Image (tube, rainbow, N blue to C red; front, side, top):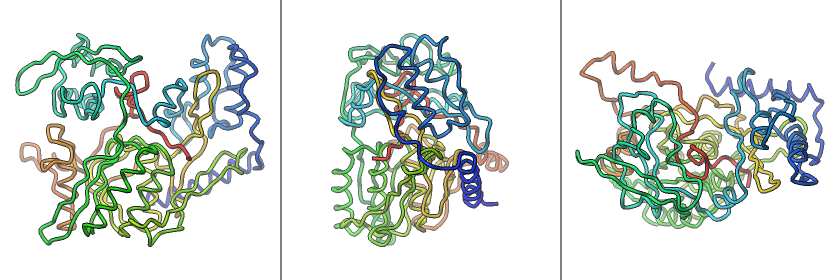
Length: 461
């Protein structure tokens, strides 16, 4: 059975099962009232009540005795669903953080860090690979000093091989402004020691827009979207106004490093792709647990003046394409847009959160799942690409040598996927290369979180 049909069947049967088990209804918002005090015992009582009321997997989650837990964060972790009930994997997405961290990212459009992200997942999957820099944030402490393709020799004196073997990239995450990261990189065969001082810097959610021309004269718009935060709306309007004015008839969205964000921003991006033809149709439906059915909602495609009205779009994607970024792919496919994915399968997060705050912490607990207009969702194994294309971190992202962008342009010109390179001319290597290793969740060094890349999540705002 095709995955979309299977997902649709599972969605229908399991949702019905959960509703039947509890009789439906809505218990109201009693769990969201703040605790009477910030005493640890009061916080635990509030958190248990909130999770029981709002958590998507509240029926499947453990209910440990709160007494042994010496911190609210330890108790929170103990309340999370641990897996074992297909099709749901263990909850690796619910998180808590300080209010300052949450508000900085989603309110101010800023983050705390050094601005360096590495290809850690790839190195852990294949330790023979060097640990390479894959991304440097513009305006960050690393900007102009570190570049994509640099090889990490050591971080704070710890050799890269040891970091990869331990799957521990926490050195790249700052805890406070002024923290210092000492790293050694290799570039052009020369080792270079560097010190970076952590700081708060503004996100650049939209960048690298360009218009290219195919051999047959068609114009291709290319744009990278890194975060689905409200600060993306104005530059997206500018970019798509330019694309429309320049007669763009093909579009490449680079979402390979987009960890998600606001549903509303993803819907806006998808509307620029396909409106006005799809205006008013369902982009995504957000479905809550059986206690919170009155919270179910639908986000529609907007009718945008600068919409390109396309029936096909090329999306550069991979294991870090997550949450609200995946929702763009799924939402467009739901209304019949041909989404040609170039790269790897996405991270697999068809669920999202309504964050709540208490005693200085924000809890982004999984509250809902997302489905498209065809009722397709639950892609916990990720959304598969049309063309499997490997990243080359030595090449400039969005540059002429970028294999993902080149793959999209090849497909746009020829209608087919580029051939993957063979290893030592062995045809068997071609077949073996099509088998993906098990993907880990997006837990690499990054911003605003202990040892994890800042996943924007999926927030219904």
